[in-house]
Image (cartoon, rainbow, N blue to C red):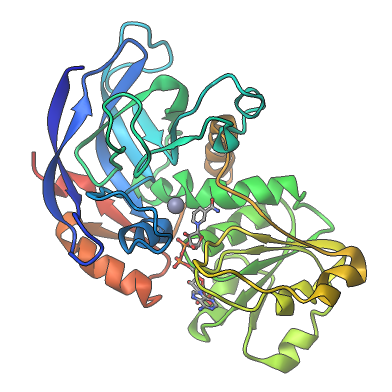
Length: 351
Ligand code: NAP
Ligand code: ZN
């Protein structure tokens, strides 16, 4: 298959900083869309993967899966896009397309294994997929999203992962009027979850380990914000919440949060702590509570989420950086020093 050489930023090992490299993108196939990348968000999953936290990273790796771009070319069979359109790619760039999960629009659970936008086996070129820290992306139009005209496009990029990862469980567990929803952790995912849950009409209670975020949570739209180290405050929420979205990226005690659930409530884990979590039997047996999880969302739901966020004027609070600041950004993300998402201006990577 013909390929094009493209500039990217990535790393050959977990021990090295990211640096400029050259990767191959496939030549546009009949169903493909090619885009020039304008913005790419930095998600904590990018950090987990470059550090090889889960042990499955295939090096060299080019991260990035919150990708917004402008279409530069389309294949002969493409119907939804033309050159010049804004477009976006999130976490999913391929799936089998015929299993029951794909048929149900939950391609993230594809029987044959979903292809993620980076660090997945690449069905076309062999090797692995390379993400959005690069000049271009090429993808079948089925997995390309239509980008509504957000006034701040850079701030909309994080919706492609952070947005769908919280929208999907908020919808599935029915956030809405009359529901008290907890959000655990105010990072990239958590701060977007506050905005989306509020727009769905829920009463939102946020739990944070950072004193500096308590006041800010209200600015973001939370009805109540609790410093989780304050046992007296925490006790006030025992058995009060319908469900909790847990976005925490490191090992933590979920039992504390199971106890804040009403009967039949759920703690829904979306964060990916690399270590196993422990659950006390009585914390789920009493009150018929559940500990469960959710993984990103399908393509149709991602489009629905983008349209919902455009309608409700929801974007992320971002710090826009250039590509040379990317290693410093990862260091700061690791220290929790970001309010609340880094987005890279990809035009700063020269051809
Ligand atoms: P992030 O911006 O780093 O936010 C994580 C937040 O968790 C922090 O801001 C902090 O909030 C809290 N936190 C961090 N360490 C903690 C600890 N040791 N104990 C308690 N709280 C802690 O990360 P993100 O980009 O939002 O991603 C969050 C997690 O979701 C990551 O593990 C990521 O890989 C995962 N993820 C999963 C999916 C999925 O589909 N399931 C998709 C995307 C990302 P406070 O300062 O408020 O306490
Ligand atoms: Zn992500």
